[in-house]
Length: 211
Image (cartoon, rainbow, N blue to C red; front, top):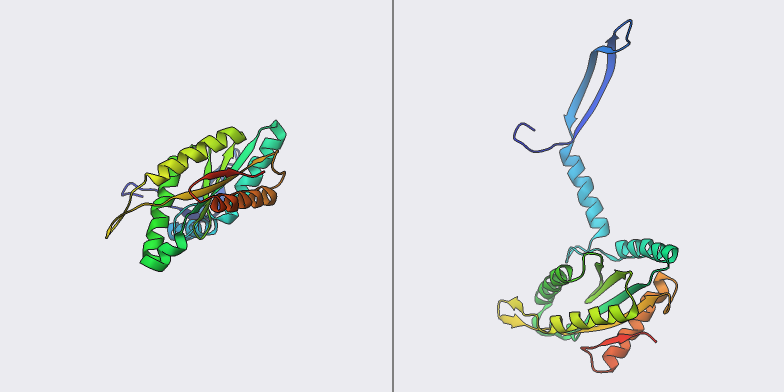
């Protein structure tokens, strides 16, 4: 565009005349139109299909696709692949006490914190409600436990700004690792969920590995 930004152009035309010897085009006739708005809408629809509308993180659909890709890579190169699930403790009480607007604000702020805290090789997605899942390629059980514990401590020290002041949260985390704890996405995810259940049974604000 003459103002300095790129635009999408769709063109259509036909050959009117070509050189008799070289067969190179001499005259063309056609039209072109700016389709930037249509492309923008297509990109927006793709984003909505793969991202959570509240937090902007990847959603469950993209989470599974990414995990399946990493699982195939782990099987091919015989790498470990860890996954942990995060559950914000007592989040129902937060919604009941302060309202869903405050609850949504906390989810958005914590999602941004997770995105800025995980390693560049990892992927975080919102699984649903107050649950998040982190995929950790080429990460052993011990390494995943260390990362989860560090995240737990950082979360407990996190101050989320609200109109009424600051708010603190704690999390429970469950870990499962391929191949020791399962060979499929569904199995590993189920095992992280069971590990979280044990973490909550043990008093919350802790990390548990499925066993």
